[in-house]
Amino acid sequence: MQWLNEPPQWSVEGDTVRAVTAADTDFWRNTFYGFIHDNGHFYHRDVSGDFTAEVTVHGRYDTLYDQSGLMLRVDERNWLKTGIEYTDGTTHVSTVITREFSDWSMVPWPDYAGSLRIRLTRHDTALRVQCATDDGGWRLLRLGYLDLPESVQVGVMCCSPQRAGFGASFTGFTVTEPISRELH
Image (cartoon, rainbow, N blue to C red; front, side):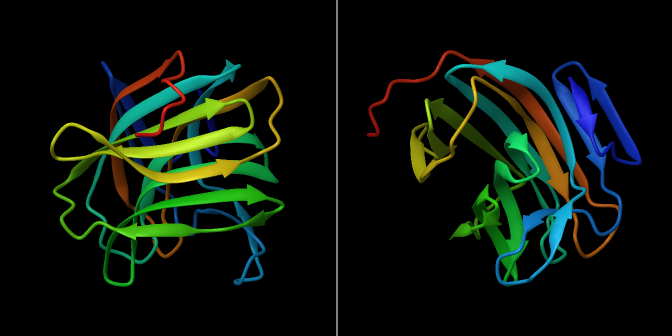
């Protein structure tokens, strides 16, 4: 695995990746805010074809837009990021899909207890985002589209647009064959 925008501090111990963010980092393009940021931290590898990526994210999200999770990236204009993000005074599970312009969907997650398992599945050009529920099931958060080449970059990302020093950790990152196309 390799970094796009290596953070100032990071380590890998067993199946845990830890990172501390630089200031003013984010992935975002144009929509609403009128700016482009492509300087978030993304630790990734190349993956070909359909897959399911999973990871458990951990962090203390307490500053506006602190975020960490999974990312799929084609280039600076085409990507998806999903995970925990702090906005409107609480934690949310958020997903951004960017096709030249970023969109943003959020589900409030006020009972966030310090970690959350998320997964991202590619089925050709369809991308499915889910998070684990307390009962061991998976909740569908987003079903979206990106025009994808055969090989993409997949990994973990973290950003802190309003500060430096957000600490994120990721355990159990895996990329496997895609889960079934059944949604429920």
